[in-house]
Image (tube, rainbow, N blue to C red; front, side):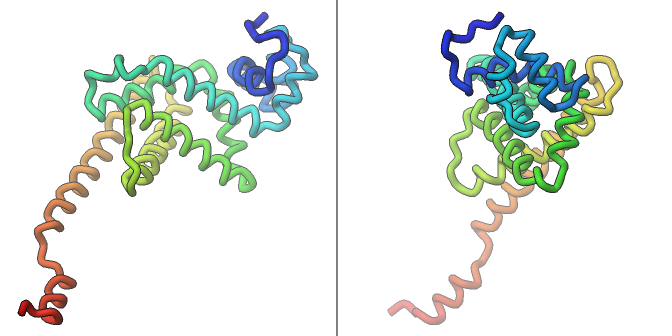
Length: 219
């Protein structure tokens, strides 16, 4: 039995059942059978549970939201405070992989569904949401172009790490951990290069300023 209130909302039902649905999806697939099994395990009316999960995408969406929420609960600002940006990103991604470790078959099936042409847009939205959750956990407050570039970069990093993770048979997914470290190092090098280029650009002669001076000479 769960700790759901007497008259739970649909969102409350989704939040409680999401990890159980994922656990069953590894065997039954992302379908109503997984929802029925999860409802029975949680002591929830299966008919009500099926109203909360109308299709595979709603199940996957709720599972990923559960992972986001659990990551934020585990990786509090206090726990991340002494880490560098690189260390924080690594800790957040590893937290997610740890959550996924026992449900890799469910993840494999979920990614197959997300890769379908009809679901590409939604898949991108879910990836962006996870990247945004990680940056917010880090404490990012950017509102300019950096807001978008940071999330695009982290979405790509996390996606490639998930693909490595799916086929990792090493103990405690050590190969994926090493892959993640290399990817973060690569991204940090790129960001450092971009920062240096921007710094040099500020002192580089500007053709626009030069032409402006020719047109509007000092009097």
